[in-house]
Structures are given as C-alpha cells and as structure tokens.
Length: 214
Image 1 (spheres, helix red, strand yellow):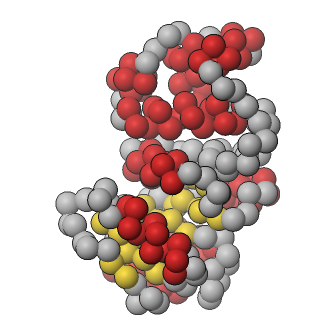
Image 2: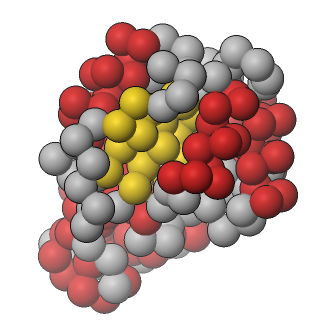
C-alpha cells in the first residue's frame, strides 16, 4: 500500500489523506469515509510526504508511530512545505505529553483510536471548516475517549459554545451564531461534555455559571 490506495475517488468531495501502518485500520477508515470524502491511504511516512505533494489533500490524518519516521517529525516536514494543511493525529497514545506536542507543532486535532467513529468524522468536518480542536498546553485530547472527566482548560471556541448552550441555544442556533455547521456545533458540545465530565445540558449550564462563562 506504500504507493497509496484510493477509495473510489470522487473529485467533488474534500480530499483526506490517511496514513497508518495497520492496513486493517486504513481499510476500515477508508470504507467509513468514502461516502463523504475523497480518500487516499498510505502506510508509511515517506509515502505520506509524497502524497501531500501529489494528492494535495484538504486534511491529512496520521498516526504518531509510523514506519520510516516519527509521526511528529513527518508532520513538521510536511508543514514546512504546506503550512496551511490541517493535520489531525489519530493514535493509540492518549498521554497528555503527546497531545501537547501535537498542539505545539500546529496540529488541528489529536484523537485516540478508542474514540467512536463519528467523533473522527465530526472532527474532520470541524477542521475542514477552519476549527482548531487543540490549543498549546492542552492536557487532554478533544476526543480521547478515555472517560477521565478531567477538568482541563477549554479552547476559546469551546467556551463560546458552552456560553451559548447555557443561554439555551440549540445546535442550530449555535451554528448560525458562530458561522459553523450544525455537525461541528454538535461535535463541540460532545467534546465539552467529555472534557468536563458532564452528562446533561443542565450540568453544562451550572458549570458555565459557576465558572463565569455564562
């Protein structure tokens, strides 16, 4: 697969470049994404770098651990040549040091492979809309799915969304006010609940009031 595997190319759809050394994961992700994205999959760092130039993806997703080079080093090389390319890390490592490193190098998101598939799809759409789901110093991945409930700092956009939720706004209202899609608004809501360990709108509202967000 080093030359790249395309999943029924559809030129009108956003282009997603996937890089992972496990072909089973590439096949599963490619099959899941092919109805919404034009997907190209590669299985090593060098093929990833070459595909960025030839495929010209709208977003690139790669693992931290890759044959032929560390994922962070590979991403840095790519960003030196294509600084506007959104990078999303999808990894089995959910340690905060990895998340911080991804944020500091300019990645747009860092997700655990334990995250539900829909979280990845929503995150891709959010990143394509210009969202940054990580901030330097982040202690937990936006969609790490570890269930820790750690009260880490929210990103500026998450605070905006939480404030609107506390005001009684629906996902559609939030999308209209922030000029994002309803899907992205729903993703932010889910990410906030996970990050803060909250389970209902009422809990989110109380948290926002207690922390002077609303």
